Image (cartoon, rainbow, N blue to C red; front, top):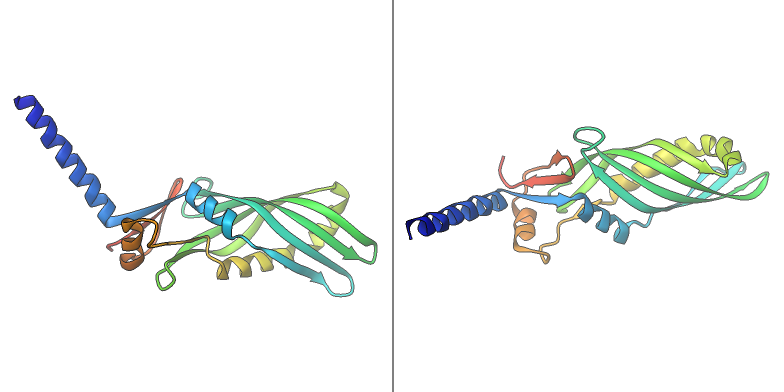
Length: 187
């Protein structure tokens, strides 16, 4: 009987400790960020040099890696469909992109933004489009940076859970840990 009571007491203490942790922070997993990006990504931009080359770019299949390849950074990978109009006529290309950014929590909006987004790597198919894409890269990089500065990668929704509602009210910043974003409630 004494062992059972000690076991119950241990479970109560463990539950209290876990409960305390839930009361001091909220974690957003890579999967939650990925799901949000899949539902809310609407990056479709027209970029280029007027009269020389115009490209319509649609970004799809965004996936995040949080704090894995570089501490305190989020890496995004994704695909882009590119429709190019130039003096050579219409062409299409498929891109595989790798982007890197600094996650920042905006308390007023209850949202995580990916600031200072940077295109770190890409591959293009067909390969003959490499030269055109190289010319467009600075414009694409600036466009992606601007888009992610304004468009959140995740927004806290108080309707999802009591803990998420509490996070929206009490959040004090953002910590990046491998595989998750941690929003602490206290300094």
